[in-house]
Image (cartoon, rainbow over all chains, first blue to last red; front, side, top):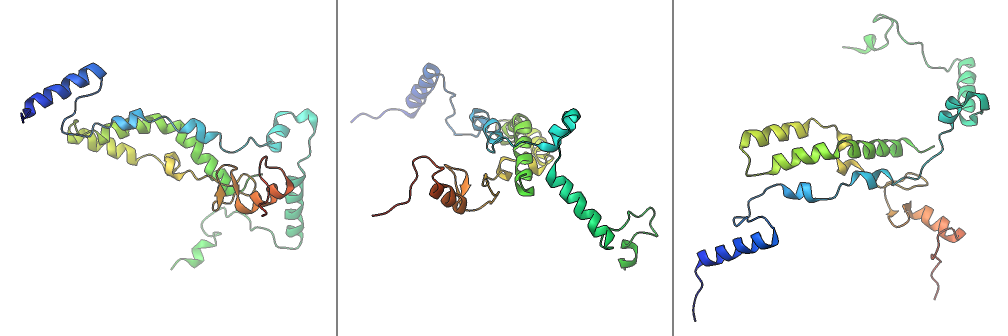
Length: 106
Length: 100
């Protein structure tokens, strides 16, 4: 039984790489090529959720239509009602002394 | 109106698409053992500067109807309960309740 020299085998691999246009990498060193070879996933990711109608955007774009966003109107009404009962959000602090966080600091 | 988790996921998806090519380029440099170590290190530092909403692993497939993140049937993009409701209403083509 005849044995093939390793150098001959390496030459064969190199020739095969040249013919089939693959890169000759006998030591299996990492070239990072797989990050360039992979398909881009972003375009299909963006299409996952179905397009939603944004009423607020349309109302802002076409003010002449006079659309009413009922959910938003209800929200503002609820805030008004809460303010009347004295349950509204506190006023924004103008300086550090007004800030409620000051008292809590140790 | 989708809930905040869905909005955040949409933000992540848009971020992934906007930054994908730059991230791939840095990944190529950082993982390439034929390049000098300082160059690879700098590329890795650049990779670390990207925000969390640019990484593909941040993206999660959520339910189209309710935004639930677990128990999603990926073929229909619905969570298991919404899948059941829609299937019983006959809104999913080719799906009907098993009986034997």
